[in-house]
Length: 421
Ligand code: ARG
Image (cartoon, rainbow, N blue to C red; front, side):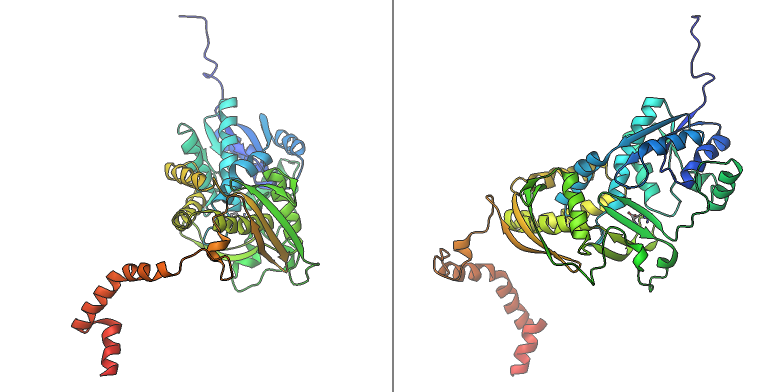
């Protein structure tokens, strides 16, 4: 036998915890330790929550008993690798929701897995309840990237209720406020903001002013704002001619479209777990960008590709909503979407006013819009006489079956013939 002692023989199990710096996850650090005997490593990922400084959060994690704290400013990564693919997919779940929370989970998952590897953890933990989509997104994401890691959710699996958390924080004198009563549950990042619970759970109640922070009231807008967004292969590269990174484009449009009250969404949505829930979103930058991008696609993407892409876009949004960011189907759809974006380059002029983002102009070197084909004025290069033969052949199968229906007295044609008799 060698002299070597196994370092894991006496070492404690390690858990990486997705840490926000708030009450629940601050208590979860000690709670997980007590309930499982494991050491906890706190992982805080900045995706543009706009809250406290990462260093403050790191220190609080350590003060609450974490053995290590891993913090990452992932805003550029989130904007470039998560928000931009969503933009290229014009991703709107149920045609309305730009996937704000759903997009942030996979980037947080990546950092959780990285931290787990770095610190030798066997388990990943998050602060979600058992009722929402986010638990699924975290755990399916973890399984996709690291099938060997286990998952545990203290609120769901270890009975860490709100009351227990307040008692625990008070008893252990944790450096976190327990008295602050937040009327809503909020999740926010660079791509937008999601607000639910409380008074909004009565779906007849209209959102009050205090729900919103990314947008101003569109009822009393300032003078209209006009912005020209330049895209290169489906991604914004300049605003009013000034080069921007994806993160800068989103942030700047959050500000400008937000000032006009663009991107407020009030929706009852279908959660993956089967519950219908009411959520209020504000995503001014995302809605402005998707509006402009979708119109540039209208100008630059070939008709059949564009029609098919609408189906793909919808499926992409559902997959991402359902926690399938790292799934094989999502990956395959990405390849299709990437291919469609080759010519999605050019400028879109967007008028921002009174809660709306309206396209008023588009131009592109890679446009399929042909003025001479489209015009009703001089310069027309479209030979209208071709249309006659086209319609004759295009309508052939309908004509044949209609004639048969008439013989058998079936359908509208027969009914109309009867009227005549
Ligand atoms: N309903 C949204 C989703 O499933 C947001 C979830 C988090 N919302 C919140 N207000 N905490 O993606």
